[in-house]
Length: 262
Image (cartoon, rainbow, N blue to C red):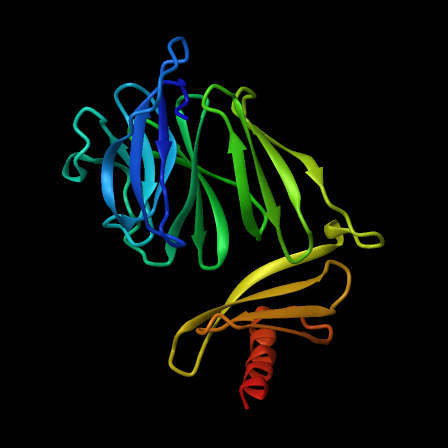
């Protein structure tokens, strides 16, 4: 259902990904059987409704954009060649537009996956102009929620040190304010006692592999998480001693990586 309640959108999937796209006009004061009209008849890409009004329907899609883009579609002239990019597909293949949300009528909230870390970005809704990044801890944003007419939105982050924390972002407070709305806690463990750093290490073929170092703020026990080219995750522990320099940590990681690959 569109934000104004005037249209119904469906994206029936014959499989697990690509979908066609149909819509029907809806009059809540004169309910009649819905007559769906096709926008895209063949399941040639993925389509997700984001929001819209009479002049523009916002759709996140990977049609002609492998890592997804946000487009404005005029339903009076809906052919794909007439779609207007609001947030174009990223030129960098490592930047994937995973989710989008319209908030406060004027803003588009976008979740990107960049180098295996979620990044939360705010854009101008009408022009797609980038405004700023929201400061978030290293982790994965699993969901965002909010309404176009609301001043606030919510997002949930899971990380190496937290099973899940829901944050509330409020546009009505100047400067915009972030606060914890709810969080899952593990008895006996405080996430505030740990630090997560992302570093990079070259593999044998020169590919830069992202690694995460998770350790206590007051001790030197370190959890090492390595993301390889085949998407395998290696978890292990090492005792780096009293040295805190990342260069020394990288040497130890190299030894761990090659011992694992052997």
